[in-house]
Every structure is written in C-alpha cells, then in structure tokens.
Length: 393
Ligand SMILES: Cc1cc2nc3c(=O)[nH]c(=O)nc-3n(C[C@H](O)[C@H](O)[C@H](O)COP(=O)(O)OP(=O)(O)OC[C@H]3O[C@@H](n4cnc5c(N)ncnc54)[C@H](O)[C@@H]3O)c2cc1C
Image 1 (cartoon, rainbow, N blue to C red):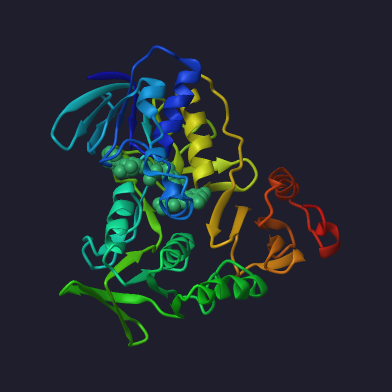
Image 2: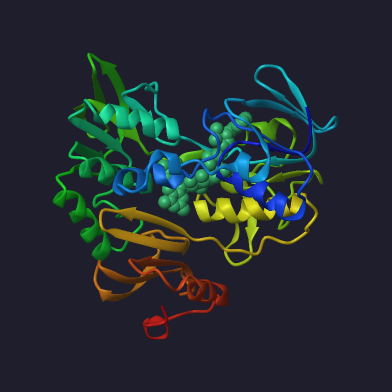
C-alpha cells in the first residue's frame, strides 16, 4: 500500500494526529500501523474510570479513529524498519508500505525486571493488560503492586476499592514522597492505610519468580512478598529504536523542532516518544495524555501543511481515591516548595521553585481551575515569594 500519511504506533497520538490531518485534508489516505491488538483507545481509563466509574464501560474505551477519520488502522502490526531514501516502512510480516509523510507515534514501553509477563505478572500499559488484571481479580485475594508513581498508586487504589488485598512496594519512605511536600505526602499515604493497603517502604523489587499459581518477589531489604499476582508500574522507556535505526537524532526521545518535525522534512514525531522544545518549560519529553492529544493534533495539522509551531504547554493529572490533582512543569520533592492551602491535603496549590526562587512547576490539588494562571507564572520566570504567590490560583 501507498499512504499519503503513514502513522507508526496505534495509540493516543495516532488518533489525534489522524484527526489533525483531517482538519486540513479531508481526502488523502491515512494508514495507521499499531503493534497493539486493539485500535487506538483512551489509556488513562485503564487505571481509573474502568475501575471507579460504574457508568463507564469497556465500549467507551476505543477512540473510534477509523470510523471518525477514515484512516486504515492495522492492529497487531509492528513496523520493524523505516527506509527514508525510498519512503517506505516494513512490517514484522515483511510487507512494505510507502508514505508521503510519516509520523512516529510509537509511545513508550514499561520497564521490566527479569520476570516474564504472564496472566499473573502484568507490566501495566495496554487495554489487554487491563483485561488480564480484571481476570486475575476474579480469583486473586492478594495482589502486589510495585512502584509508587502514578500508575502504581492508581492501580493500588483501584484494586483496594475492588476489595482485593493489596501490598504496595515503593522506594519512598512515605507514598508520594518523591513528588509531594511532606504535609501532602502524609495525607496521600494515609489514604492507602485507610483503604487497607499494606505499604512496603524504602525498598525495591530485585527479582521475582512464579510457581504454583503464586508470585514471589524478593526485595532489596532482604524481605519478600508473596501474592496471587503482581502489577508493575516502574516507569517507561520511549520506543526510539526504529528512529535510531533510521538515522534520526535520538536524545531521550526522538528530537523534533517546534513544528514537530525531525531533521527529515517528511518525518514527524509526537507524544511520549518525542523530545520537543516546549515554549515555556524548555526542551523535554512528556509522558502524559494532554500532551499526546494536543501534540498529536498539531503534528497531524503540520503533516498536512499547516506549518504551525507547537506552542502549547501541557498539563498532567491523576486521581487516587477521592483526590485528584493536575500539574504543569517539574514536580519533585527535591525542589523547594511554597504551599498555598485552603485546607492542607484537601484543597490547595503547591509551587515548586528552583535555586533562584523561580517557579518551575505548579501542582493543583483538588483544584480544577487555574491552569492558564499556572502557565503565566511559569512563563514569567521571575523570582517569587510566599506573598507574591498566595491566592494567585
Ligand atoms: C494506565 C495508564 C494510565 C494513564 N493515565 C494518565 C493520566 O491520568 N494522566 C496523564 O496525563 N497521562 C496518563 N497516562 C499517559 C498517557 O496515556 C500517555 O502519555 C499517552 O497514551 C501517550 O500516547 P502515545 O500515542 O505517545 O503513546 P501510546 O498511547 O503508548 O501509543 C504508542 C503505540 O505505539 C505502538 N508501537 C510501538 N512501537 C511500534 C512499532 N514499532 N510498530 C507499530 N506500533 C508500535 C504501541 O503498541 C502503542 O500502542 C497513562 C498511561 C497509562 C499506561
């Protein structure tokens, strides 16, 4: 096949890019080649709404990319090589397809330890992982969740709300301690205790084994955890191998310019896999859904000739038990913070500052307005104080 627009990766960026292309070009052909067995779908629902919202069903997960855009979506089709001089890609089965313009939307892959994925060992990323975990919860009394980042905390909360006994293994002393100031981390941590989650702190899993329908995990403090299954949320690595092999510049992600173009005029990259120059925050790679949808759309529009710089600074969000937060920029407990609470741990804003007291990140806890104000504060790049920030959001 020859496609005017060919997208590698069938995730959230593929969907938004196809929509972006269609905003400017209603007739040309779009081909999407995705390794996933499912058509593009909304990934955040896998660790949130599908567990917490009884009104939200599996049928609401697909993004309806093919029917809405007319793109030909090839699921279960991994692209193994790009030939830029002939403008073709090759798939795992050896088929070759031509492109006019190419988008790399290969996303990211979960970090694994030396324990093979199985129905009891889930490195959580895909709709199929969700289905496998749901299946496991039908028989499992006890599931271990490894990783105290947003995937680990969301899955631990989701499982405990299903009545499953959960052990959460985290390298933090207090859950959320790597991101939140101590006042907030203490409240966040208590949420897990209140829902019966056992937390194994300041420790990492070093190895694991599966035997007799059980999983045994060894921890670096010398102890172990045994459970009916385990879910890992150990972070992700961008899928840059294809780009690398095709001779494109890769530096913690595929390097693109403000038009989301690589050094090859006809090759773009967007989403979790792209390293782009953010207008406010500087060059970076972002692993969040708002970025995937906005950057994907912008890349699609530019592939169809828009030539519009991507000037949007994305936010990210997470929901755990009854709390939710959204944030922009760098959020790390290693930075100094200024806290502006209406009620500590219930509603407020945390500002993350660098050594010059310039705000580099803004966290809004159960606060659902103020993203534009946060962007303005970040863009000003001027030293701030408690007085200057209080009440701004
Ligand atoms: C469970 C979960 C919950 C999340 N919740 C939130 C949230 O609450 N808030 C938030 O901001 N972000 C969240 N995220 C992050 C967000 O979903 C991602 O940032 C977003 O999906 C990235 O989109 P993408 O298209 O770049 O990558 P992906 O959606 O990962 O899609 C990439 C696709 O490319 C395919 N692929 C890779 N290599 C190849 C190849 N060689 N050939 C063909 N196909 C290939 C993969 O199979 C995959 O389907 C969550 C992520 C997960 C996993």
